[in-house]
Length: 584
Image 1: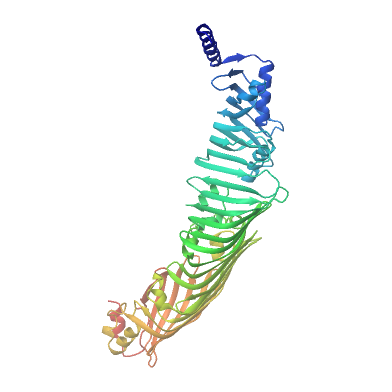
Image 2 (image 1 turned 135 degrees about the vertical axis):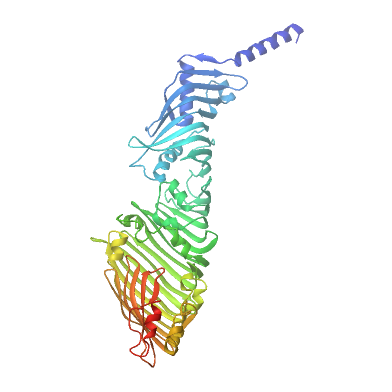
């Protein structure tokens, strides 16, 4: 090639390069129509309007559509984008055909129409997945700085903001591969999804990471006509209640659980998830077993059997924020929220804690149906004895019908006192039986309607804080010394029994007495359960003798006052100075 020809060739190349670097506004014509048709073919979206189209050939062919409006052919997806940019493949372009390996939707606002009332995340996911499955010639689709509006019957249900998603290019039978980030309800979230399209067994995977949850699932789908997915699930959250609230699910009982870590072999079917070989960690306490989650119409269901080494039952119950007596006023019981989900859960642990008390070999259960709530302690060993209990609440025309049964047998209260401060002044071995029934629309109404019975029987123990036997001995020998230090020390007893009937929230002692080697104490009176107050009298007498020391036991159940009744006659004769001494 001559020097003149070389200069001419280089000049032509430079000119073409400069022309290629230019963006030309293209009027609506044949090229523009072919570009839009190619974009529609690779995205499944129909362009319904735009301001202009631009094309640049070098260094790589690229197309840009400004202020674009688009919709899916069936109208489920629709929206607009500030710009749609497409990178064309060079070789097809040389033969006059447009084909794109990447299409970017810049700052799009996409409306997704969901069926029904759009109340669940499953409803939200169905239309986008159906749209993606319908694509047959999909390029790599990139959504940058977008927003997605979930609408049901025209009303916005939720908004996904800061959407940056990458949908990988695929052939018709290859799986969908999606990854990226978004902000949902103020929580930045990273996610990735592999969803199979081919017939037969195919891999599926899901990963979600945010401050509320870390979720990993890898498995296989059996087939599109038998949509069963089997795989490994791993989930962790610092607060299960906040996580479910993120999805607008607010089960009342989930408040009992704090942090949760869960791993299991999962089988996923329509409206059902079965977890086998499940390992659940509740605030660091491990439970193993099987769990099943279901969605039957409008009610979620949970069933399972779990076992572990230890569990803090008291902590679980305390988190439920059960209304305290007198704290809710006339507020009605929200019983529907307590029975909004179906639950059949059985838990067994080697040891458990309940407000300081230590239990072993514990088996407990929770059964919830619509209008029915039942929880129970099937068995538990405690301080040399055993404990059982059952609580049942059923919706009734008059409000909530409540039944409570509790029993302690052969329990060493002295050992229990080391863990339960309320028993610090009591020792002895024995049992307690309580049966109660109540009906009402508020907590106070239920307590005020309680009826039933209570029985207490102890042997070989002591009551701390009072020295009744010493008081009686001093009163017999020297009345002047009777009042000294009787509120200190202990009162040993051989037996202590109490039987009470309960009606309309009022407990009436029918037979209550405590006996020691040299004395006998009888107790009579009432206790108001709604007011939590005592109004009782006691009489202390020697085994042999006529001396009688009457007492009053009144005040709050939490801190009642035991006082000698100074106005009563203590001795029929020979003790005229004693009443006078008591009044000083």
